[in-house]
Amino acid sequence: MPSSAEEALGPANLTVGGETIELPVQQPTLGRKTIDVSSLGQHGLAVFDPGYADTAAYTSAITFVDGEAGRLYFRGYPVEQLATSHSFLEVAYLLIYGELPGAEAADNFVAKVRDPKLAIHVGIERMFDTFPQSMHPMAMMSIATEALTAYADEDAGLDARARVEQAGIRLLSSMPVFAGYAHAVLRGVAHGKSNRSLDYVEDFLQLCFSLPGSDHLPDNATARALNTLLILHADHELNCSTATLRMVASSGASFYAGVSAAINALWGPLHGGANQEVIRMLQEIKDSGKPLSAIIDKAKDKNDPFRLMGFGHRVYKTTDARARVIRQIALDLVEKLAPEDPLLEIAMKLEEVALADDYFISRRLYPNVDFYSGIIYRAIGFPDAMFTPLFVLGRSAGWVAHWLEMASGPGRIGRPTQFYNGSAERNVPARPGAS
Ligand code: CMC
Image (cartoon, rainbow, N blue to C red):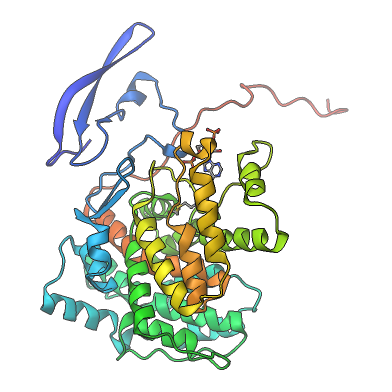
């Protein structure tokens, strides 16, 4: 285990078949004491850890989730302190470079991200024109990101880290435009034009809502709320998509290929795709007219694969740090933009019933980031399929930071082992009739 500020503790002794192996133990800056098991292979041993729930595969100094306390820290700063006091790009800078930018550094960073030279290549624009309206925007985002490998021209003269930094800036620059274009495909209309003189979030909103057939342009309060949502989604340490990104990075593949893979991992309904599923679930509750207890019973039924979407988390054992802020935004914004939307009330009642139920109490299942975010996106006017791409917009900042962190340190290809339970060695039977 690499060491820096971490505290070395006395070793753990593991006794297997009469042999005692000493394993180093360290206390990270924050989090659980960690046993270094990297020498176990030399003793013919492996550890079994489905879902990697108790395995630290990397060291990282970017983000820490305190699941017991329901706190989330970016570079040591509590996320709720950053959420309304800074712009999304300032928080992206913090994640990427480790410190909050001063005024000049912030301006320079914004100028780099908004540089007209980073406008989307016409080849990628044409790709969006060919996407069918039935394609999910997460697929469009992933394909467009992968296509950057052909159209981006990171300076070959730079060292590996500086090239990734340049690519990261291009990613942050491109993502709102990709999402805006995907929104236009969903609506079946020609995409609009990015206006790089506008603020990052305002430009994204005008790209989505100046389309033919749009009846309103979101106001400043909506832009501020979306800025906060992007910050709350900006990073979340080694979740499924970021672990995917790091896995791809470890093979030496390109940055854009890694982000494209991470987008696909995020799409799943157990991960970022849950925000779309929550709305589907709430809508079903409304349309079916069934009592909330019926949906709770279904979620508790072990013979039914259904789960209460927007509830539970691998790390949080109390309300998700982000969910508290998002709930309040939902209450404020929905009252203003869509007071007639019945889904907010259904969500609040469902939360109340679940939090009083022994099944959820005993398993420590609480609302996560996705429980209320879809209700906000819906009130702004986004169709359900756009909710997970909005998650991508925020998370792109974290993906840049994680890739850069990997590019800066010694790496080892990601290659978990397995607990093999197939056939032992056997001989291929002779074919009937063969001599
Ligand atoms: N509804 C019903 N039961 C649940 C739920 C749920 N939403 N979540 C967990 N459980 C039960 C689970 O069945 C298990 O029960 P038992 O001990 O009787 O077998 C117990 O709680 C522990 O769950 P787990 O499956 O071991 O937990 P996990 O850490 O592997 O999964 C999770 C975490 C988020 C995938 C899961 O809680 C879930 O499926 N939630 C619903 C989907 C969701 O909202 N995902 C968004 C996560 S937050 C956004 C992000 O990914 O960053």
